[in-house]
View 1: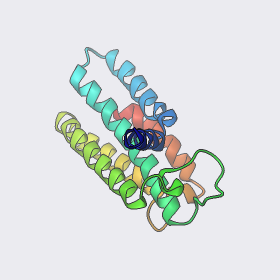
View 2: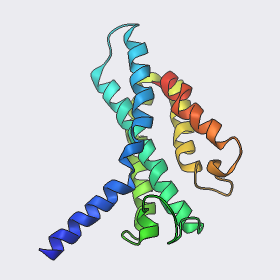
View 3: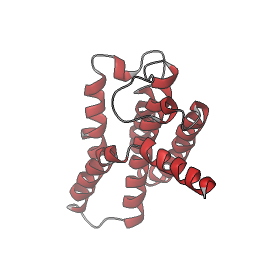
Length: 166
């Protein structure tokens, strides 16, 4: 019983770690883009679903990268206010959070490859910049979240870029 309880608490921790409340931020602009595209003609359901999945995966990448990078930089400490983070809480090892972020990024790139095949180089440019931004928001020597225009870039990627890319 206790092993099963521990397993489910880990599943619950991962679910909380992907920050489900933020996922609408990736799906709403895709929905708007799909509604706009629908006005021009019928949509391919598979392409629409993969577009939504890719956006969703990139949001999860951003969330997991933020969890890992903020912990690694010492930003998320025990006295942190707000929802617990995976690495900071100790429920999941920091390396596992990093691997999950990279694995999710790989899944987004695989899904995105089909979209590039369908849409060509403009989709490759949008997808590559969105993938880079999802990681760069918290990672790298100068994370976007720590620069004055970081929130403007976040708005651009969750607004016009996501709608137009869709």
